Amino acid sequence: MDAITSRVDPKLLELLVCPLTKGRLTYDATAGELVSEKAKLAYPIRDGIPIMLISEAREIKD
Image (cartoon, rainbow, N blue to C red; front, side, top):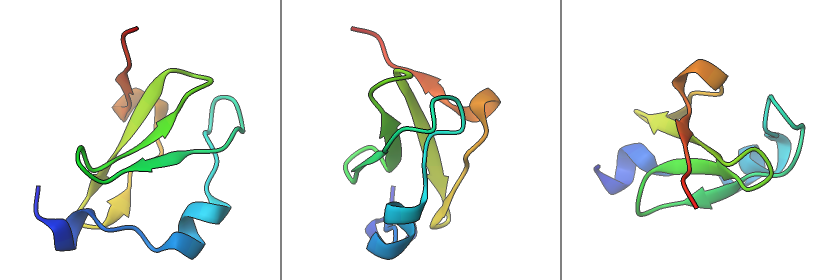
């Protein structure tokens, strides 16, 4: 994924929470995803826009 399209504004990241747990998210720049450790879900970022839908999230395996 292109670095420009996967970048997320740090101020936006401070405001976003996991829609399932309402917990904090961490930004994984390599994968271009926002990760919820509590829910074990990774939300994709497409064209610089976080897709905060549970149905679009990737399940994180242990």
